[in-house]
Length: 299
Image (cartoon, rainbow, N blue to C red):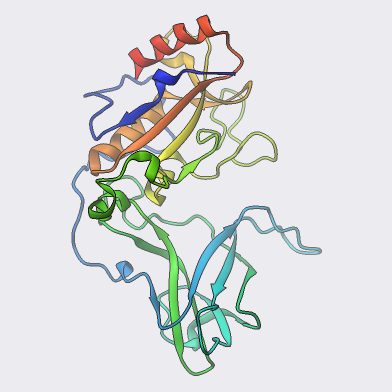
């Protein structure tokens, strides 16, 4: 495997140029709207705590339940009360911002300082709260799953599953003077290996090839800023731009150029940055250099 190091690209807001020619229609077509909205939103009140912390994660493996339907993207409730003098006695899942235990979908007892519960509730097809196809509000925004903990009478700790579309801009005063090696940049392995988009398959989940379950646009909105792209070149396509694909090893997953368009649309809408590492699997050095040169022209 050869890494084309000069194809490691730091994308600024207009780094992809004025336009990218496309022969494929992307699965998610980004909006032409490029203005971030600044109206206040109650979904921006994303976290409250008198002691300790709670948070939501999504259980990656499918839950196989005997005699019941499988559950995909089960919601996990997590807690850490190791700093608390008095430990909350229960934790619950809520559809909206928690105000009372009467509104809880499910409530579990808390019996340890740290732990988690895997619920039998699926996240489902979540909305990106204003960022589904274009620019929304700045700052973190709550999705529908909320978590809360406290005693039987009071809710003391609140959190939610969030999107983080502008976290770099939001934290600019803290990170602008840091070198990239001093940052912990969230990224995704085999970032383009989500939902097949080939002539023979549109499968969205499998056990061996697909590593992600969200589009590149959604990954950016959630806060991902580093993309591991495994790029393959197929010279049997007449159009040069159509020859570049995102693969998992030797298996084609989806065309590359539509995803570059998604990245460009996001960066044009924000003051965020994104790192992209391109790898051409199982190629000789001379072939990789040639492919990288042509790729950078397309890029």
